[in-house]
Length: 529
Image (cartoon, rainbow, N blue to C red; front, side, top):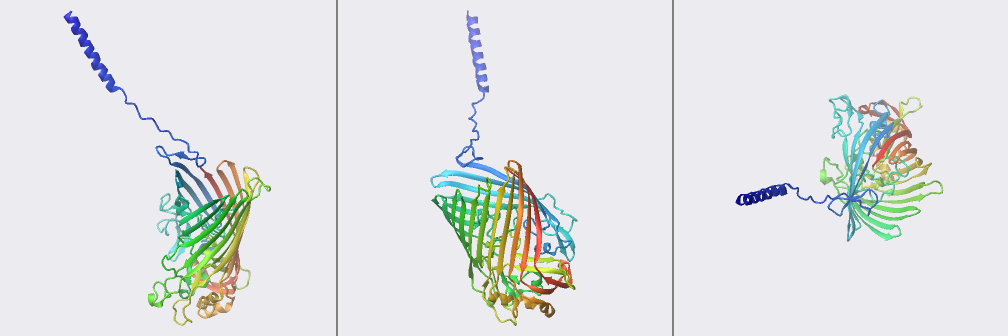
């Protein structure tokens, strides 16, 4: 009996040990998985970041452009090497780009807190650069690469470009950071086009640093006041004509740029009405023109030469977008007009083709090698310190006006066509014309024989543009397009000039001062996501 009792007690102990071992081996109960939840507060595509009350949306596009008859993706062959229209001018330029954007939003007691960032990664075909040492293929991200016949940094980040289009915070009516200027029309640079280089209105499609407050009044009416940084995109040039060289007139320059340091942000005010029929917007901007010194950066007198007074310029713009469903589902007409005085980039925007035009073309006149057209946009010009001149001057502000517009017609859900146009006029006042064409002016840097052949010296010019684009969207978010743009320079100089520009390959010869025309074709494939 004693032995049976011992056996029973031993078996129970063994079972307890085994049970304890098995209990130790059991898995601990895991924390419940937090699945991603859809956020429906701000539209399609948003989801809650796990563990937070912040909604996130990721997006972007992949775009491939091939642009015929241009050395850049933004404009035509209008200036510099591109404007030569010879064997250094590209028959095409190719660019591939990936865009990636992040949009976060959180509901707060002050309204929605939003952050937005848009990053781009681009690879663009380079352009030929003639130099005194030879001709080299230049990658867009850096200088001439003399070690390779072609781009030697293929695929490298330094050979391509990394861009920050937008990076801003929005909170309680404020927008702080890099965003499209509130001055710009709702369609920014594109009333109906893909081509970047239209004149006739404000731009900054890639964003400008700003501090903006927007008040909403209901029924689609809002007003904004903004301080924005002009240094990157809103300075057309303040030029000291006393620093012009003998080749300035010929090469598309009125002298040396003479900016002082940053002094004051541009102040922008906007009123907008956004309703079912379309959008109306009125914009104004104040732009401070701040010069260094009369003598230039390394002049003989330096600070002792003094400086022109600051001058405030301004710009005003009206924009109207009208939905036209009676012409076709989704059809729209966009139009805007602008006037500037000492703030030219609010007309000839930062990606504009035609801030400076120095363009060679054909001529049918006997004894003339080619034709040449020149148009130069500035915010202001002045005469600085120069021995033998009539003395220094204050800034003379440059006036411009312009307009652009487009009509988009949807043939069906897969095809649409837009026609568009733009126009800008740049004018200099009487004092400014004298600084360029009069005694001691830029024009006088030409040799006597060159001056004698120029029958009219007038820096005013006009730019006209017209285009047509057709888009095909075979499936959602995939679009193929072809965009054809005509660009016309109406310049006011007349006669002949003798050009000496050996670094740009042009020979010593007679050139007829003449209006210029060209055509640019942009082919694009883009998939949005």
